[in-house]
Length: 351
Image 1: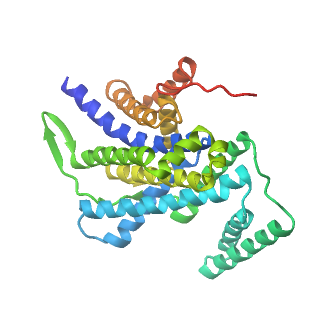
Image 2: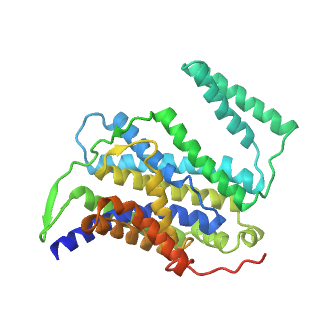
């Protein structure tokens, strides 16, 4: 019994991380009906932002909860900004047309070409400037973005953004794994015969606090009400005077901030980070969102905990090599037996 409770405890801690990432998937899908496959890479970005913030702010000092909160908050803000950039320059142009999107992406291409010409900052900046100007003039005088791309096009766009972030991460952060610093000193505890450390408790408590905050934002704030209206009917919300572009950007920002928090919390227990670290947790969080009922916030939380507990039980009682297979087995079963998920509702679409 003691072993079972220990595995259950470990599963709840792991599941809280999956639940945080799954919330981003389900929020974006709820508003846009878009599966944002780049969300797992935002989780990676958040972990790296925490790594660099801790290096440049904390230095070699001892870890503390105050520093950890500061680093996590900074990482959440930076990741929220990344989420807004992704929405503004990748998804919005495909959804309704947007200015300067071509200039933004050609500016990035120019920066990469400048980097290959010379590793100096001047070369990169000149490349960025030239690419941005070329994109601006092309967009102004020759090419217009095509509004209302199909859902399939947006899905492929999301995969492209994911690959861009993964490969861009290897270029910017380096492909080698890095050791995430101990921003909270580890202390082993023994409670009622169960062994756990203060970092595991921190992960669970912070995850619960963030979920409660998200629930309060969605249900009791003006922005949250607008989010729910947009999720119910995007076009009708627009007709009622809601700035849907701003609400969608806020949705991306909230989801990205939660993914960054998950990146920091996971790095406390698994301190090895690399630019591809978001692939598998991102996929499992997506499975958690589908399991709970994608588009349903409580369902995403429930799905995250179920996936986390199932994974730890498989490792504890079967084989550790099956840990990834269990999530996708659950995905297959839920799609066969209840495609809308545990707490989701089936939708009827007119063709």
